[in-house]
Image (tube, rainbow, N blue to C red; front, side):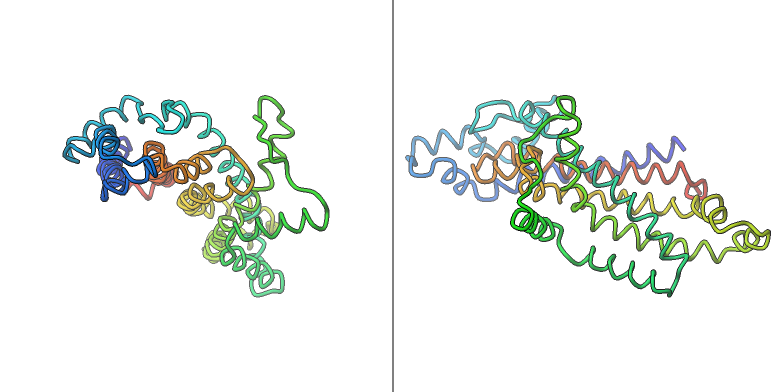
Length: 313
């Protein structure tokens, strides 16, 4: 087991290095555009030269990359050109907001997707199955930000109500915090819940055809006992995998939802940095998102190996 973990960690490191290089180099593909965006109407040759030196654009890219990575490994993500504060200090509290939104979304995806998938499989080709599958297709097809915009519009116009827009930390007021996060997390989870539902249904149908399930039915066990005690354990292993992989979509989805619901998370921070043409935060957030996806996939891979002995062979 330890050998497999080490092997996967070794394989993940080159991916993180490639992603970090792309995050560093992409905004340096056109150095003059960086200078022009940073100075605007205040552009002068002297100011341009100063900006080039500040961002290391007058030095070879590979040397600047290694210097930047050395600073990143020590926790130095650079300094914002707008607020003149360290990016790491600005980013730290925003990570907690994004993680809370993603955690709520995963919770709702499991809470909705797994039971619905089981019911759909147990009532295969019946009217509940067709209705639930239709809703799952809608959940996969309709963009979450569109649903959020429509729902907010209906609530505001028809019911004169919108979720709380001023961020309140959980430790300050848990009730208001949950009220603020529950609504966007529920809408954000729709696509993931639909994926979990369809995968749960497929795996449940496969497990229900196994010999040990037929034996359980032959013993006269109730439907609930067959599903919960015998089938669900084997169904959940692949579902955990697909849930972990879809978390990458949740990480990207938080960018839009944080803007719509005024949540001061990493996504809102990235959007503000793009509008302000602040390149150090952009690099840091892109690296954070990409590394998060790699780490999530690594954790899912290791978890599946730990839960299912057959995966170790």
